[in-house]
Length: 447
Image 1: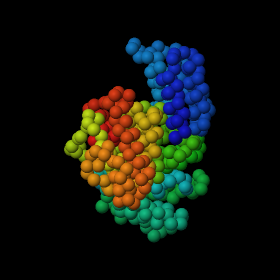
Image 2: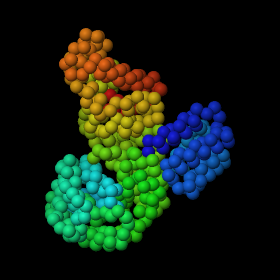
Image 3: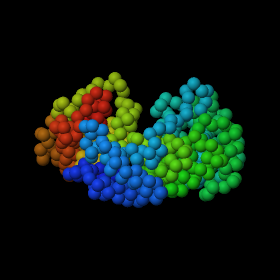
Image 4: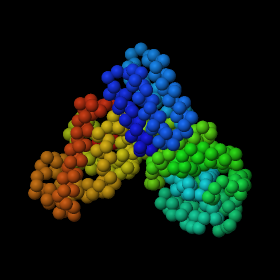
């Protein structure tokens, strides 16, 4: 969805930079929206509908008193995109801690990412305090059980794969084996190369036997508009409680998949946004569109940071003081735990579509590790007072860390850039917010 995000960020910048909001600008925005959605494989009929809605509302509706026209036009684009992706309602996972056992069944065609999603979902539930077990119910795919065992080991979850050629028996045996030790079992069912009566009948039998509280269809977002057909077919066989869209981070057709599934009425509950076990997010149309437009998603940022830092952790507000390499070191550790920096910083208002975001996202995980090694070779005085790092000190640090002087200079350049971001916030170029939101942003940029 990066390309779609870039296009919509451009639309937002065009609206913000326009000297006047008139009919000509509205037509430009409508054409840009059409082009962005069509390239993302959204159905032509839907594209025409949203285009007409934006045009009509922008030209006919009067902004509320005190609201600038450009802000109201942005709001119209935002609201129409939210409606395209299913409206404002967010569907929650039906997992009840008061139940003796919660059963989640994953279904889908072969190659859609069910097994990996099982691990991601387990990690998601573990972070909420649940004990989760994985059950293999795929007797057809070679090494399916081995893959599930590897993923279970990675997320630290018990796993059961019955030695059987009967998928229904495998599902039932797995649930029976784990039910006394876990709160939730996730059943990884078999897929097929294409929709078939045999597959649907097998899924019906498994559902009848294990009585799942959730039946989640896993679809690869690269299938585009066909995702809607898949959702309808599976829903007829085993009533779906939700959909998980995988590979949304790389799918040029992601917009088509999202909108097509939304049209079926099957709720999109999760989206996969990367390869890591942490890269699974609850799908919220409002938050998704906000990030698409580059205006940030504070709810998601709050959620992610709260998982990684304790409520009682003592604060140090670098926005009011001097930002040092020691502060940077602590933040690199925090960001590394939370996930790729470009995915974290896109949640922060003011950074989502700006220069600072692009600069910060160039810090890859490999560079994070190298930067930490370099800082481990610095003295406490150097970490607290980076301005004393002259040529001889830089040479000593490079030798001690097994890196080059260029690597050390690269770290110092990133440090200066981060420090400039802090100054931007202090000066008001990037909004300086207080309260709970301010605490979260400070924990990302420096605490």
